Image (tube, rainbow, N blue to C red; front, side, top):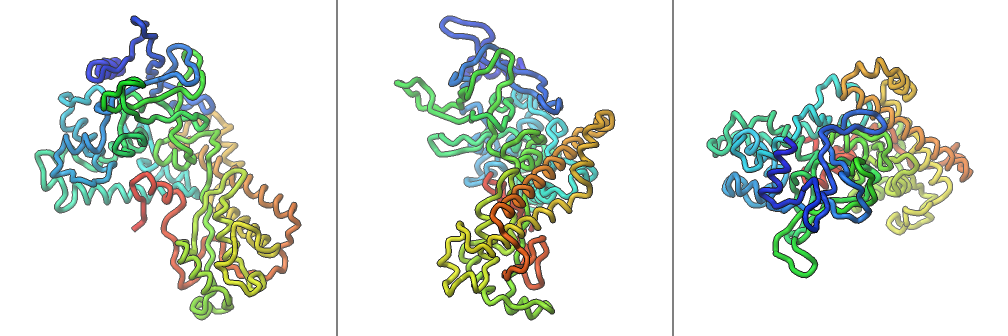
Length: 489
């Protein structure tokens, strides 16, 4: 399969991939490895690209003509602009072409050599393809809600575009045969898209999503600064008007060392959900923590016996509406920090009349400390929210550590189960570090939270009667930026 891909790239795209030197050209710097292994966990990470020779920082690693890529443009050409109309979501269009090339055309496909190296779903294993009993191993983790949401979204998109009443299977049965355009194949296509598609940002028409043969074999490192992008082909003086995908080395590589790129600053939850793996060392790892403050408005006080009205409650509700915030918000917490936005939100929600000193809420800069009492209430609220998230897990970080330590037992688990145990343990470790940092900050600032007057609600994810629960997690909000919204409707 690897040799057929290389031959196809050389023949159809004039891509230089020679193993040996030619006149005026050094050997191509990379070689395909059929099996790579994570250096820390020793788990398989599938195919990858290795340095065939020593590579220097800044060396050109690959050039792939854009015409060999699968894009929305190529999908509309392959399946008809009457079917895939202008403005169709890029993910949906490319998914249709992937199914068309693999299952409908098969060996007759122009892309057959490329399709042949694409893995099956079980070789990638993103969580949206996991069985329920495997997801049970992630109980307590925010990635479960995002997984369920994405599963429902993919089913709805399939029904709306293809399989439902008036869908493409019904309208164009010759181009979208129902025996090939199944939901199972749809899941395969999206597994390929989420784990391999590349967003090219410097094309003449703006940014585009693309499946890029050969380039998508390169694995991810959170520490890499290399990104695949596009440019106009030709040399510095003479451009030919065509475009190509390009990659440069971000550091030196020794011969036979695996070459990496960055898929972006992604948390382990994102990686596990979309790519099927998580990293032991990930500086961008985070855990979503729910902060829910229900302003004690007159309506809430009337509906809840024993709840006193907060005189600032309606101002807070109006302020949140003006800045586009809900009363229940998920924020990503990192190992050594938490978002400024979370502090700003809580400083607002914890304001008392004494804090306002007669000023309007809109007059305050919530990126700064409001008062010692307010800041103490804010930090203690984050502590409570983090503790609540920790309590959602059915077992402790120490329990997970013992499971991993027992290598014989750990190997009896499936790959997905091992990934789940590592992931949930790393989430707990991160949250515990966050707690330690918060408690140290409270001590260092001399903030005594006892007996302070504050306008608080629940920070434990429970919303008082009459309030509306926020539907999206922080992870789902980030996924929206990918171009495929994820929701729970």
